[in-house]
Length: 184
Ligand code: AR6
Image (cartoon, rainbow, N blue to C red):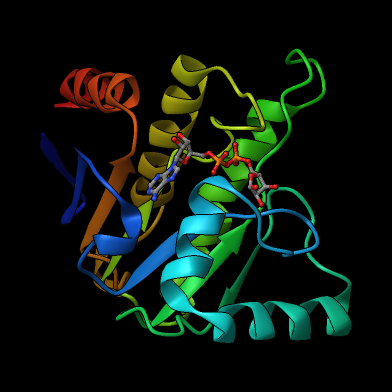
């Protein structure tokens, strides 16, 4: 499923984000950029120790990143221009501003991608694993945030041409298909 907004193609597919082909991928990291399980573990395993070394540098320089923020490292052995590490909110019931923080993860990551001149970027389903964010709300929040970001910008000045949501799990893949249809 693909929609085009302001000359940017937005699509979704099921798969492993480390095998994606494009300029930059986003990692669902933690505030210390320590590496962990889930998609974070998969990216560090596939990219090798250079990514963890770059994460350590950021940690030493600025003490990590806050939920909603993004930081860029090299991609190690992976064939990307870089990895955009963002930190999603831990779901605490919804009254702690979790949706706004999740929306900011997507906009901060797009901002970082644009700063590096990326033409294409792939997102995992941030916070929907061990951080336990409800999947339907996460999908709505992700799509709304990305679409708002693109609509607010002049497409002539936007390097991005392709944004893809890579869903590891089947239920998320179906959810993104359905919700993208709603925007078509
Ligand atoms: N490609 C794409 N998506 C994946 C992959 C993969 N290879 N592997 C898992 N996912 P999670 P969070 C999906 O738990 O909830 C880490 O330990 C997964 O199915 O990776 O943001 C960090 O260090 C789910 O839909 O991230 C943090 O401590 C989505 O990625 C913490 O987990 C996110 O699940 C962050 O938790």
